[in-house]
Image (cartoon, rainbow, N blue to C red; front, side, top):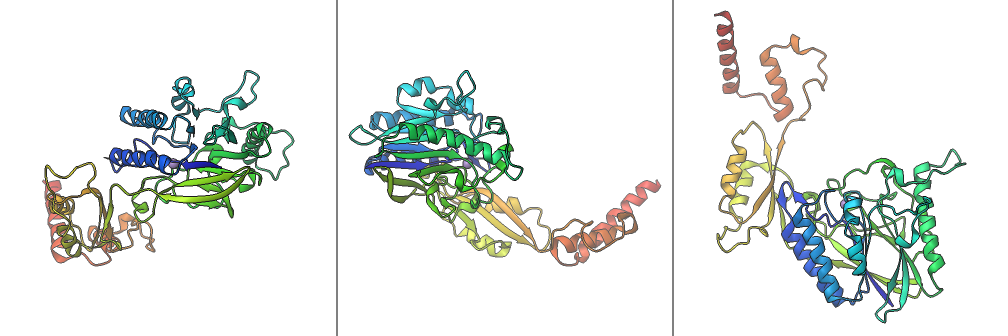
Length: 420
Ligand SMILES: [Mn+2]
């Protein structure tokens, strides 16, 4: 029996509308270490996007190394394999490899090649060991692939996409090398950071991938003899192509406000001999709450204000400011309210929350003046007509008289100044 724990898309160093996620990441990593013990995990697979940016902060880098050091100290026999995602700098992830290799941590940042240009398969295929220290599986790991990583395939039929076939060819080579090494009772596991056909995006938080991998890849690039495929890139956990063994684990913490209602997880995978026998979702506890008020979408300020007033009061000196709930406020406007942000901030000044976003919804269609039916140019409209049109678009109503009076007063002043 071999127990794998599959996770991805940690995005260490992530900020949500400029608020640090350090406390959430730390809580996740503490929970993960305990989970590795509780579930007697033999191998930890981290399928890319370890960091949020190619140039992670010192704090994010320290968090990564601290995790690896603690995992190694606590679980001397745990196999750890991590690949680069599209957010990671491959070179930066690889840099400490000589040191980490000595600690039994396998990192695949850039695609490693030998002097003759062929893949360095020994740097892409790793033995995974069971609790008795026997090799129980082989892991074929490819990092996020860029267009320049892909082989140029001669004689490709015109109906075949060269990028898709290039990725498929690399998996053929690396999985083939794992097969060459595997005995009959040893499983083969693959890892990748890519966008698969049929994958469900979390609307706001996955960066559109560049070059070769903006193409969604068909699930057939993974042969049916693979016991499990640990994928990264999509932030919601899901199997692909009705193949329960081809899986995204999703990210462990919410990376966008629209993930507030989604339960983040890591995957616990059990292999027996060459076969997958069970997999479980391990839900990651939410260490920092995400609140959206009102919960069902924007409402007029008069309805939102009491909701904010009802939030728990701040307890200075008692609350840990880094773990206070993150709050999105959604207000519907039927007319301009220039002081809204100040009003919201004042309402929250003594509440135990952190404002991440103030969303404003206007009642009108919100289109630009040029959209819409009118074929008249701006020069053919009077100033008042422009204001009326714009107001209708934004608020779905006619501007109130005092606003129109203000406009005419302003125009009179301008005309007098021009005449003088
Ligand atoms: Mn990601």
